[in-house]
Image 1: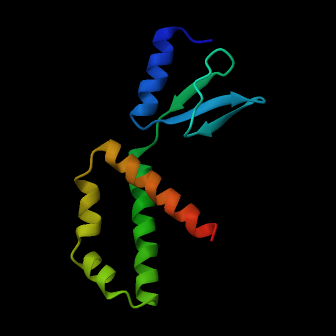
Image 2: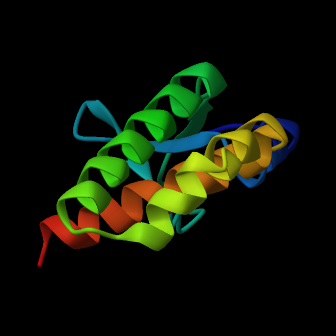
Length: 114
């Protein structure tokens, strides 16, 4: 079990957007909704690569462009052509990029489950 300062560090890192994992059955498992049962569960955080997230967000935007072309979505294409969709990432903090990345993953997951 971690001491109080280690617990605070893990929780603060999670709050700041790091990936939270808990140890179960011999492996580390990612979670977004921890129970914070420090007596029975070991937690850790891992950093995300901002560059990797930006790359995946850009890939996602490119796929959205392809869909917009296929569906004749002129409004979306006009937004893309203005550059606003890509410029927004340059002006985001790391925390905002992480939030955007999580939203993209959730949206992608919802599409896959339909």
